[in-house]
Image (cartoon, rainbow, N blue to C red; front, top):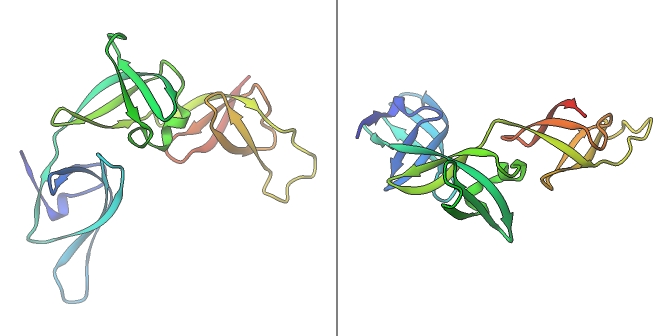
Length: 190
């Protein structure tokens, strides 16, 4: 167990606060007028997924969370249940809720390997690949001169997710998506 000083609590670190594991999303150390420095942070609870703001003062120390990781394979989802199995043994299956998977889960294709985070042997959230290549299954035709809306249209991907893409993207194109933001990156091919 290592303790972090207030200024060591930076982005992408895992900490324990009130017995719960958190990921530091953002941190900013600043000084208000004549007062002592403060580290204003945004923390994501890894068990519930909720984001909260918390300020750490100079005298505060916090425990660094020991997060274990394991590789798991996504199988399918049905009625809000997401089914995974251990990467090496497909007989060892388990399900999680949609909240645990997070918003990036809508870009998961079956048999995709992802990293599951564990805190004290308890499964928490997942680390998704930063980008995904998915096939467009439904795309309205781009109408010439239809650029008043910024030249975007909404398409349906093979996973069922819908995103906005440029007008030149057509059905059966393969596109790359940023899974963090859910935004179109580029067209990869057909």
